Image (cartoon, rainbow, N blue to C red; front, side):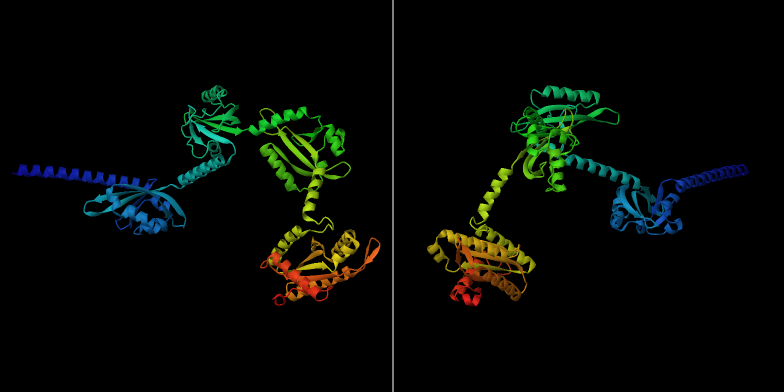
Length: 574
């Protein structure tokens, strides 16, 4: 009996010792894992199901830049950016977490007021005899976000370049099928055709195709692109001269996976070169030629140039064409001209230049850029020029005939109506007023009948000269037919009374001038005018109405005994 009790006590002691060893091991393991938790580089948080921070390691406190004591028992949502609170609550504290681990991105608010781009990984931890906890791991992804943004900006930048370059860009697979096409390249085929996956060699002229395929395969094999020229057949059957060069895209192992082709339409340049060859044969013809280098220094001129400008070859070679400038064109004109030359390879148009003797004359100028083989920039420029003085004089004469009275050289009705329209618009903008003075010569028919039309024509010419002397440069004196003249006054006073006073002063001046004695073919003649005046201030009345009002006022002058003036009054018209 005693022996059995001793055995039981011994066994109990051994169990107690074993339990103590297990407890010690558990405490050591707990301390070990607590140390791992505390000093882990990752930020750990333990949250209650209500979102309160129940635990946090050192990395977590450092990441949020808040003391640990201030984090414990604080609501985690306090450190979430306002715009992300709802999504964080839904992910971490809602029913979604019961379905397993959640992982998402959010913006957090640090203790110092700065924002943190973070990835949140949450897991629900069940505990015996205690409420579950949410284990949350925070990872700073700010650097990754900046890298992603930089990559997106870089992609946007290169796409912007590809989509706005005038050159044609295509990315091809190793069989020559199209993967990507720039908008300029797509425009060659029209907007409705889908180019993805199509054969890039199909539109190349049949005679050029084998050579281009060989160059493509060599680029794939060596990774080195080769410049090529070929003919490209458009859908309508027309041909374009193309120039292209290829490059390769490699994968991380250095293996060629794609070919990038940059092509350019050089049709106009080829045509310019052809025209230049023709021009070289005609260089010594009667057309004036001038050749400069790329820096626009004159290298050569022909005899026709010397005849046109008065300069011998030795006087201009080594200088620039600026020596011919008339000064009539500003810097913007020449900038636009050279921009077109650089872009299209040529320019032509009217320009005013100066001869050696100082005479300024109009010239029709054509400039063509000439490129050497395998060069995109011009090596020299060829200009042809022709004197268009006679043509310009003829154009001016025709214009003058259309707008001016042939006898008096005053503006005719057409030009008067054009200026009146602009005057009405100006009055509407400025608030100033204007006036029309319709002038009819009294008893003019009697002069024609008794002395002949030669006397009448001389009188009309003298009246025109006197009217010019009565008005300002900004005003208009016109002859609208027979013995009728119109004087248009602009920029009168803003008030009706002031404008009327100013118009009356001009009317009196005209009455005095036209009442002076005339000497016609050695004979004295006296003539008087009747004047009707209509004021205007805006565009509410038509031009025809204004002329009618002045006409009514003029007939009132005649009814009043002639040799006087009257203003149009609406009540009088009624």
